Length: 180
Image (cartoon, rainbow, N blue to C red; front, side, top):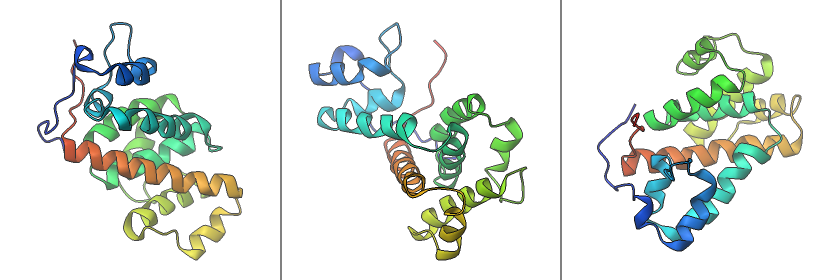
């Protein structure tokens, strides 16, 4: 997993523009600190608000279950070699019904894990989107037996969002938070 040095330094809250401060108020803790991903994005104030709106939809608005969403996120985080993403969503995945062994299996093949038929298809969809930017006809047809059109769209939206997030985390060198 990539965890290079920070190439773009996260901004402290005192350095945020008013627009950024307003956009990030929902993702800051009681001490006014934001996760490094958000503090790094503060370097681009115009991007913060639309990024968070889309991220909010992906995390709270899709018609996938939290477990299904986290299977997709963790798989694509692994495929994109994003240590930060995999680390953060391991915790979320555990709260969303995945076990430690499920999470470790997402670093391997679909044969390594106790997955339902639909979950195997989600993993295959993430793999295909990562490799070909396309879900093949056979996989799509099988997914459509388990998911409606809205959910099928959400599968692509989740993988696409977290591919982008992994790219920015890796390239910007966003570091895993240390305990303070």
